[in-house]
Length: 116
Length: 114
Image (tube, rainbow over the protein chains, first blue to last red):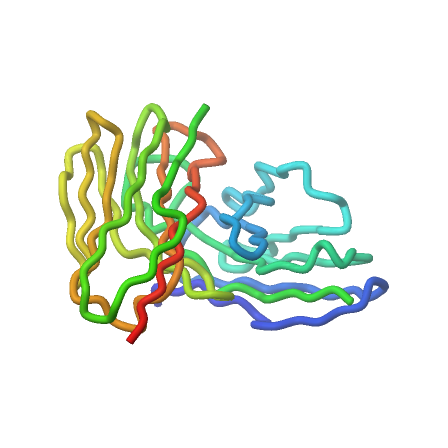
């Protein structure tokens, strides 16, 4: 298995809703990432987990809450989002956070989130 | 400041033609450079990855080159197909860059038309 699987592929939610995005990999990677990507822009790093511990939070608002229940799973809990939070949310994983090349940095297919 | 610049911003070519996309970077110390293909609304898919010592790497009709001295890379697409229409993103990684290992370019939007 060489994939990062994200669910759901599409999500529409209201500003008062609570929802979660899920990400799963079975490559034995110990680093997992959440990115946010707006249309025609490069991905922006949100969170980094290394060995199931949050190591980077790029000043992301608290309405986004990450969780790493185990080494294969990464969740992003969403609450009280704003319409400007609508974007493609990408999960990625790699063997470790730092090191030489070919550490298998792999992106998931993304969740297209629309906040109404 | 670590930066990755790509050109052109967008490109339209006829099906069957070749094209070359450019990437210049200032990331230091350099670890590796990756080219990704991203279809609209989908996650990036890796095409090639090159380290300091590699000058060229191919993946089917995609050939990437790297000049670590001038800090330039190119992605050459041969005999383009309609399915090549996508954004192509150059991503550079620095050595010992801690928890933020990747610096993204803004991408080149390629449109292949019949």
